[in-house]
Image: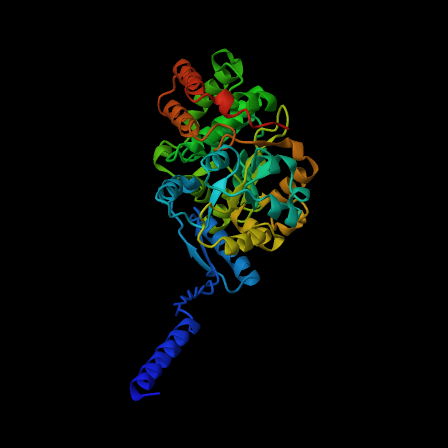
Length: 451
């Protein structure tokens, strides 16, 4: 083989080897790996943002008792409270609803039962609490009318911590003992007592009243109408089932309210409910008609001892003894920033550990009827709690945001307050009839059943 042939052969072998090597090597591939890092979720902060309106004497101390009970059960929970001054929660509701509308709701907030609660439920503001109620066995420890007051469509949406009785007449016990007066339980007895007090104490007002937020006037009228109409027609009135223009009992009640006006303090339009209680506590007035929360105001605001300095009777007690009531309640707000913490709060709200100290201070009855009535230090509530335990069917929702729809309630307060300023029986009856039609009360209040 000559040198030229050898060179060509070597070149060919090298080229063929390179070709084989090329065919044997795989085509390089780029492998992309995506690593997803899921951060460990931070545990829910143990905070409770709460709105309530307990700021008056007796109420502030009761709020402190609530939070002390929560602290004892869950020491790690930080309470962020936004109390708003204003008896009955009128100012509180304005601020609260603004927060809800802005999409920054608190975890929980104070609300009454009945129509006020229904308004929040219909607006999608509150979560149902069926599972919690089953866990707590709450249906078995509270009166049936109370359970109905905090349920919408058969589902509970809040946990009640008390029952406030609206139609209570408080009186200066020492004055009544001195004048040998029997506490009145009917309208005629009330007028007779006022006449006797006027004769013995000309400078003393007979009935202290605070009308600044108007619902106090409706409280007084309710007591009169309950006696004139009886419990069944009381319910029918506020459910819009009566033609008020044809209701003789409504007319008589307005006439009696007008008869009572001269015995009321002339400055009632500028006073809140607790200031009216203060009139009795300072011995400027002999009596006042107010709910159970007045007990706390007497004790904390005036330093009066129940059963010693002041007494109380449900008013009226004829034709039947009926207790008009509404509960204070708390629920879980839709979009609550701390839902697990809020559920722990609601467990405490339902407990005797919260209800006993809170209700004893603030004045309401216990929501739970399995709590011994003697937990109350005063004979007034011991008797009423026992009566409710034995006669739950005597409880009727009052009109304080309860039977009347929430849209109609402030209009009704305005109408009765206007009557107190300028009594006009016919004009007031027509105004109430118009309200019933305008706000379709018959349909809006059809949800409520009594007993």
